Image 1: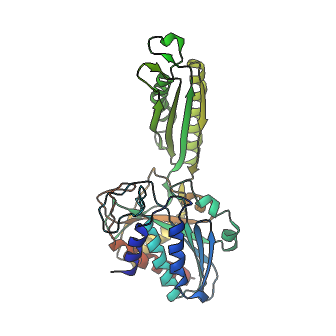
Image 2 (image 1 turned 30 degrees about the vertical axis):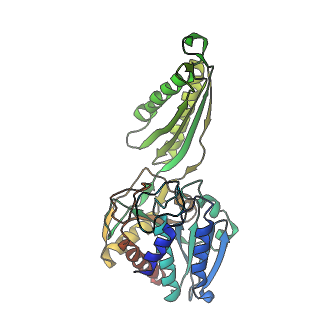
Image 3 (image 1 turned 60 degrees about the vertical axis):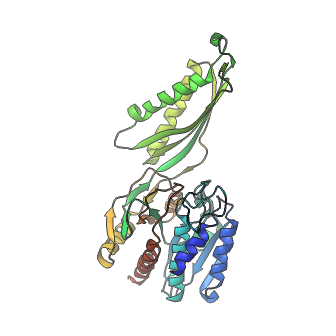
Length: 374
């Protein structure tokens, strides 16, 4: 078995949620300690790790980022190496991401290149978001890369397929929490109450007109409420209600417009239904905007120097906090085909491990190409 497939399986067994990746961090540090110390500088930050692989004659620093956290999902794969942490799973492929990153790092250590390479093992991508905090550190500024790349597994594409495009790849995202406060009472006397279940239901229906009638159809946006809470009994009118959802847009401008319209709806509903509402956007991620020149150069490299199938596509309304890093440093993310019957965040996600060795070779070769070009 490929060494990094085994590493993936061992990491798969110990998924941990954001900023609680203690076993994961220790596993990664133990692996790094076995590599030649004279080539590496290793620093920890919270549950993340910075690793600088020193070049022979550096003129720049090439950055590579991987995320390391799992999800609050109960695994249903029945694999022999299933999660040992109840209610937690690497259901988004970060076990793949880490093993690939370690493989690339190992290749660069044992086959030195001229330039420095900075590897970022970033916690909390699934929430609350570690990228923004990680790049604000003194460590990041000290070793600041000149360019930065990352990959994400793609269950919908077969092994041997790479998918990316310049411009927006992942969407802007924002959490959305709305609380409704009214007056409860007896189900037979609605005229003496302010029924927040009814107001909440009306709000869910009306808010979709923002997408249908306020947004340019060519500038995609989504408002989804995934959770609604109201009421305590069948014969008691609800005095409060709560909605929990998400906003997704393909541009920062569209995100701002959606929020402005939501705020207008909240103000109007408070007047119309004589109630009080509170609005909280929680956390959100900035769009992953791939640098045009670097992305097109990578696409050309895959086309001309590898046997991979290359698709110029892949835009999604999903979120990825790598976007915060690309605000600071030019770079790109790409999708790595892993051919699974079940998709990201699914309890039965089971990516094809053949993609691990393929990705290590591809990215290591690309980093070497970047370092050697004049």
